[in-house]
Image (cartoon, rainbow, N blue to C red; front, side):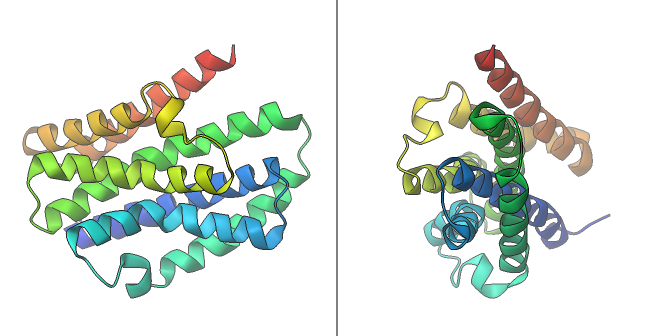
Length: 202
């Protein structure tokens, strides 16, 4: 059985990786150079968690206390940038790939945000909201830096899905336990988000 801090780290590392990858994909779509793509990857990977930590007064923020997350974001961003830049299929395929990574990152960071908030003694309702902020924050910063309308403002069921997933976790964990509740919430957010993206692409 993992303790709370271990669960947070276990969730945050893959969340950091997939959000960094989503940023690198977006960087290729907007013709960023390698430095710009790496910068965007880092901002996207740590953005939501940074907003959350500032709101709950957890300073220095998480990536200043543990360099693991920067060490994860930078190489993932660089590698993804080079792979995607050489992909065949054009912008449509890149956008779908971005959306799939974004769905996974949304789910993981939502759950990270809830766990961090609960660990800080925040009430369940506010923990769900902070989970949503953590989930959507990095992607919002990514889109703003690319000069496009953030997904949270134009995409159906994006922020709402994050909040529903956070609420599902908080409601179910006393009855189903940690592992099942995390898996259920992750699956809900990811599967529904990918289904919405697939529907809109047809």
